[in-house]
Length: 435
Ligand SMILES: Nc1ncnc2c1ncn2[C@@H]1O[C@H](COP(=O)(O)OP(=O)(O)OP(=O)(O)O)[C@@H](O)[C@H]1O
Ligand SMILES: [Mg+2]
Image: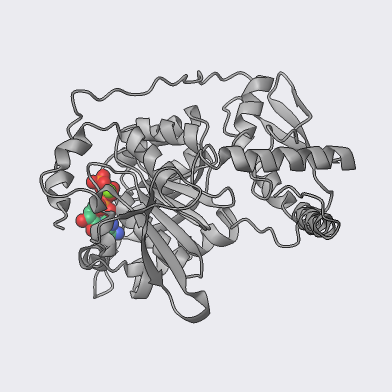
């Protein structure tokens, strides 16, 4: 099968039948948020263990807002010592703070009664069944979309290098190339196998199986699961894709790809358009945006627009990565070819951390051309910086869901064991048992 990367990659024209989906864009008012605004923001906070957002699980019994924008949220945990508390706390604070009218966020912790707990478990099980068809991305998976205000700043390079560096720490990492017409992920990872669709038990439609790559060594060996239209487009079939809406294609990748187990999903966003971002906000509201900018102050202003779009779609920006920072030549001279300070200025403006600065380095482009991300086995400042940013993501900014020892899960296991014991008893006494 011949894969026509370049042919399609050139074509960024918007097809005649392209329509953007109607979204209600909340006004960016400077006043305090309403109770509904806060609840809407909290829908992005997912209890990874219970597989649903904390609002629909009934974990937010009260929200109070002062005219000055101080927000007090009450959160009821399944059990007081739940190890997910730290993560939920961080997520609640950062999501509510996305509203421009919020000055401070306070959390009051409560604990569910045994009745409430069993109700929430029933709801969670129901959600797990109902939402299975929604997206195939597991609720325990951290979703990081790499975006920028304009093209060519290195989104795709940053996406594949960070995904590879995270996977090389022993994680299972998905890479979704949401740049439907301008895909570059297949080339950057050196994959050109077409995607396979397989019939699987429990699904009426065939499932798309992502291409897999094993990265890293020994105990920290991880897996990359990669999906891109570059694996689907054959010579001469590009027209079929031009007729599809961008968001529709991304939606299909989220629904019909058999992602299975994933710790992280990195999404390489297309340049410019806000539609995919809005679509993601609707389909996966827990998505974190990572904004890439060059050090030039002008680029930083463009990237600020991407951040503003994020705020209006209620997505959280988890950090800024400055790419193409000062180049250091073999003699040790440093040249700030694309200016200086843009990354820090943008991070300060939107109030998020600058996660790192990737120098302009021929090894990054060469690694991309060779399909071997420099962050994997490469040496030099750019490779080191990619690995440092990956470590910051995993250890601090977007740590993996840590569910070990969570009491609610233990409860579920006990319930399952009791269920099995009941079934065993029913079998022993000759009664019909529900399966
Ligand atoms: N730090 C870097 N040092 C050297 N070259 C780089 C660096 N980052 C990216 N490049 C090169 O710059 C070019 C653009 O990068 P990339 O394709 O990742 O950008 P993009 O933002 O995804 O572009 P598009 O908007 O077209 O999708 C590529 O040729 C890539 O190899
Ligand atoms: Mg790109």
